[in-house]
Image 1 (cartoon, helix red, strand yellow):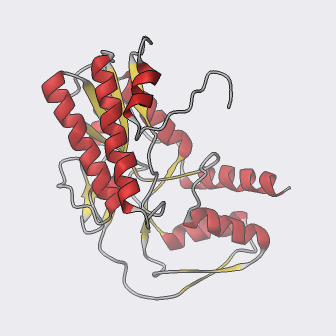
Image 2 (image 1 turned 90 degrees about the vertical axis):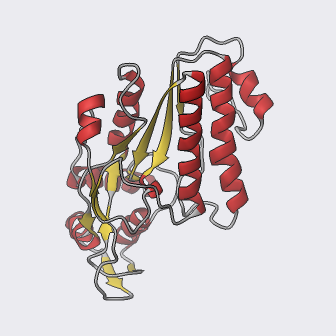
Length: 264
């Protein structure tokens, strides 16, 4: 393990307490979680233990250690797939997976600790993070690898299905903006996304300009399913100073170059 890093199992309260005890910590950025609905989907209880109990263990340690700011990496999955239009943070939670529900519960724990114990908390709701450094396999990574290998790939759904990709550098910028924001912001949760989503066909067209051998077919051609067009960033811009900097074209170019280097 690199110098300066310490391993900790967030589901074990004594390990979390030992990690924070006797250290002067002013900010916790909590990114230690199951990172998407595609991860450990066959282990729902473990998702709950990691994402909910792990968050609560960290919050309790933050309370005891008098940590000034607690930032939770949450997800737009809290809204569910049936929310329509451009979604702001006042949209009611309606998760459709254990993963999404675990993020709702983790945010509820933040609310409880903030109101009862005065911890200054922020949840940043990410959309679909991609780019160099992403380790969890995703459909986008699969597309790029197929294009690099000159292999055909089949996708579920139709070409109009909307995507909500966020370049990894913009995700990091959102976390840092939340960590550095003034104390006692007017809301608990903020959307950190690239704004309006794009149909998957637009993403494929951009990739094809970078990977001419990419060949994609859709298993079903149908109207796009209901779901968000995009996520409103007004509050993040006003309160956190966050604005995404990377257009999809540049983000994909960097991601393709990284995966090319990995194959070399």
